[in-house]
Image 1: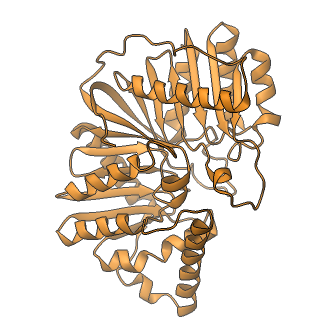
Image 2 (image 1 turned 60 degrees about the vertical axis):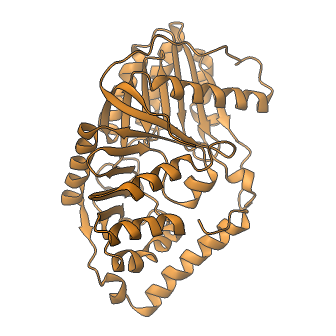
Image 3 (image 1 turned 90 degrees about the vertical axis):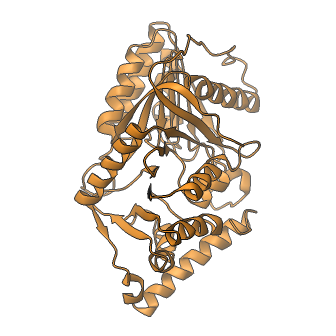
Length: 386
């Protein structure tokens, strides 16, 4: 499906939780009519409680407040934060709460991975930042690195429509009549700025490949440089070939990836691709200062995307995701500068021969991990040359 680009937006790039959560809580505290938030994770920590308390305050002063979290990512939400939110008048639901461990059935792996918030139909937040403290990690390391975007302008309409549609789907699935809502509260989302952007979702019906196709289209059109930053990077053949073709035609291609081990199987599977990427002339950087959670890209001087979608089978084949794609040189330049700063201060570029330097058993382990992930993807019914 072709992305629908809307002009007249004001977009503000937010770097990690230090910038995102004050902006989100401030917007919730200023809400007059409606707050609607979706998150994969909603953790019972200092940040999660601060966001929950802001939502409870809004509900108590008469604002319609709705929150939808994922049943796996926020599997403790129903016992930790949900009771107090319900008591305050917040409408809170869990998406697919019936988690059965070790079952690889396709429908159980279709998770809500979007991170969205809309306040009064006037302000939206789109990105990759869960409701969790950036310092809530297994190790004493610097804050988690991620991005979100504050959106004002006509792009509010498709964002709000997507949220409303999913809320209605979950209501019907739960046979819940108490939380039914009419059309979302909508002020006039007229022009607020001069930036053009599109809102893209990935689902399992009409928009299965919208985000991936937007990437592939921009990569195919690239003439100068491509900079990707992705927490979990395990692209299919089409995506890898597109990057390699871009490098062959002289485009400078650089990828910033997770340098710390968070999920060992995926980490090793990604490293199995390093030899081919480096051999094609693609520069690979590993971010090691803290956990990289970003899912962003900048292509040439005018195209950028920020959102929840990784370039891996979970995001591209299974989960509900949401990204914005921006066609604006100032926004793209701001994101590029931010990424370059992160690369200078917290990343290490891999030598071209780094794959060959690994002992044979290390290379074997990584290829075994890669093939195991491929097998698991096939088991749940998503094979093919993707």
